[in-house]
Structure formats: C-alpha cells, structure tokens
Length: 237
Length: 108
Image 1: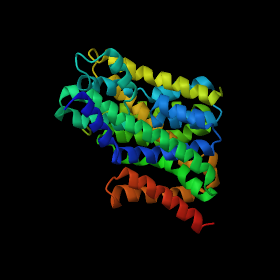
Image 2 (image 1 turned 90 degrees about the vertical axis):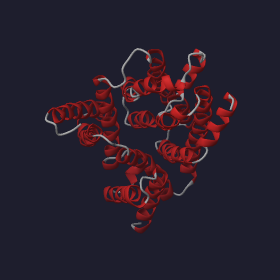
Image 3 (image 1 turned 135 degrees about the vertical axis):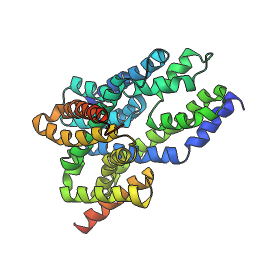
Image 4 (image 1 turned 30 degrees about the horizontal axis):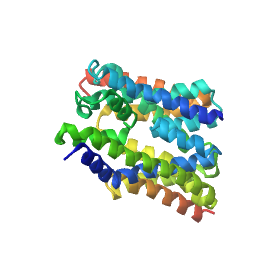
C-alpha cells in the first residue's frame, strides 16, 4: 500500500456512517443559521474555518443575542481548547519523523471530534507511512459532507414549510444533547454536563450575552472540584 | 464583510491556534494534566449550558414552539437514541426531527 492508497482508503472509510452522522449535525446547524437570518457565506465559512460544531453553535447563539464581538470570540475559542490535548495525543500516531511540517500543520486543522476518535481507534493497527494520507482522505470527505449539509440545511430551511423547518432547526441542539448523553464514561464528564445544564439557564437570566461563558466557567469549575472531592473520599475514580 | 462573517473568520483563526499549538508542543506537554481536566469540564459545561438554555428558552425559529413540545420531542429523541437504536447518533437525530414534526402537526 502506498501513501496514495492510504488516502483512497480514508476517503472510502469516511463515506458512510461517519459522513452521515456529521451531516445530521450540520443540516440542523444550517437550518438554525437560516432561521436566525444569518448569511449563507458566513455560515459556510464557519464550517470551513472553525471546523468544530460546538464553537459554531456558540458563535451563532451568542451573536444572535447581541453579544459583543470580543465576548463571542473569547467564548467560542475557549470552547475549542480541548483541541490542544487532543492534538498532543494524536500527533505521535499521525506524524512520522519525516512528515513535512507543512503537512503536519495542515492536517492539524482537520482534527475534529469525529476524525480524532476514528484515527485514535484505527491508527495503531495501520502502517505509520499510510496514516497521514489516510487522515487527509478521511477528513476531506467529512469536510465535504459538512459543507454540503450546512448548505442543504440552510437552503432547505428557507424552502420548507414552517413546521418542517422547525423540525430541522431542532436537530441542532438534539445532536449535541445525544452526543453528550451517550459519550460519557467517567463521573467527571457527567458532573460537568449536569452542572452546566443547570448553570446555563440561570446565567441566562443574569447576563444573557455572557451566559455561555459564565455558565461554562462556573459549572465546569464546580464539577472539577466536586469530582476531586469525590475522588479523595474514594467515591469516584 | 458583516460582523457575523468576520466572527466566523476570527473564531476560525482562534480555534486553529489550539490545534497548531498542539502540533508544536506535542513532544513537550502531558495531555492528562489537571489543567486539561479542568478545561474539559469547562468545555462540557459550556455546551451543556447552551443546549439546556436553547431547549428551555430558545431564541430564533424555535421560539415558535411551546416548551412542552420541545421537552416531549427531546424525551422521544433520548428514548430513540439510548433505548431503541442503541446509541445510533444518526437515527437519534433524525428521530428528534420526526418527533418534533409529528408533535407540531398533532397540536396545530
């Protein structure tokens, strides 16, 4: 197998469930943006450049509530901080010593939850020289699916009758609710989700434009220390 | 360029910083540190807070739905995802849209 066939294999593996799951999230996101009256160009750019649906959702919801530019930027970027440890963990699997720095930094942009989790599961069994090509192929399909679905959701949201449109818009929060509900395997994650879910609406009453940031910092910090306390008493791992 | 488009570009650059830093520092930092555990908690809490606010007090198009309609559709989506399809995310998300549509139709 050559590096090129690694790329082709990546294309093939993404064109199926991974691309479909992502499409479900981005169709909802596109419809949500159309529902808020935001531009299609800005919406597609957010998918291409941010490439992280939680940060995109935060951007859209905060901007729509009239939050100041800097507040939106700070909150959305902070929500992407998980990419730092994710990239650090993936890097030794993804890159070889002879990988060109340009390729390494280009591949890093395409790291998202889906591509990362997939790569972490497959790379150990794959020859190192095929991994980078595979990753580019896999994420190229994911990006194409996400951009197409963003546009589809946006345009369908405009064309469909109101009830169908509302159902499309509703998919966006549901995508994350289900992702959060199904993806936790440690007590700390559950604590953070519950604390955030309570803090979010409360913070919204106090300061709607800053509520995502405040709720995240307050709820997340509370969950972090609660988990430490539980761990010290031997009640959680 | 509208503020929204400018925000998309700025947030894109800001988000890339984490990924680029990850490549640059990959040999030098420990991903399982306490700092990253806290960052993970904040990120989860942010997202959970946003989702619960959007379900309970939405802005935009979802303002045209009633709280009980959103809660009922949410309940159905959770059932479809966790019980009926054993965590098939695609099926769960599609089920949420179908549930919302049926509920809106029946109560119209």
